[in-house]
Each structure stands twice: as structure tokens, then as C-alpha cells.
Length: 43
Image 1 (cartoon, rainbow, N blue to C red):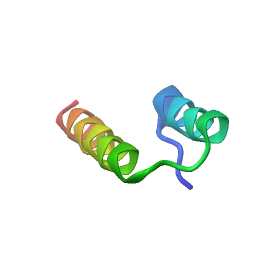
Image 2 (image 1 turned 90 degrees about the horizontal axis):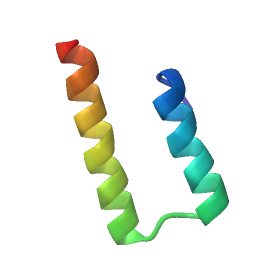
Image 3 (image 1 turned 180 degrees about the horizontal axis):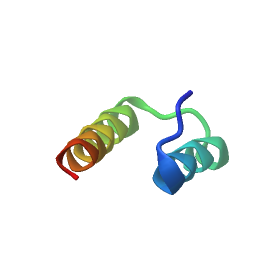
Image 4 (image 1 turned 30 degrees about the horizontal axis):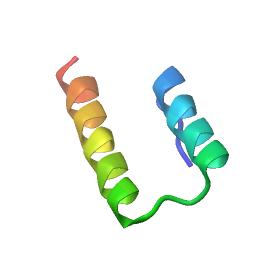
């Protein structure tokens, strides 16, 4: 998996602590990922 700075590490760490995401969690993570990508591309 790719790590995009500290934020990527936080997301991976949260997954390891909380276990595999459920459907709703997966959608939330996808949204967070898209928002991050937009910020990175815009930055």
C-alpha cells in the first residue's frame, strides 16, 4: 500500500487497530481518500 505522508500512516494505523472496515466504513474511507487526493492535487 502507498503511504502519502503522515496522513496515510494514520489511516493504515486506524485500520490495523479497528480491524477490517465494514461497508459503511469502507465508503467513509473512500470519501476521505478522495478528499485527500483532491487536496494533494490542488496543493
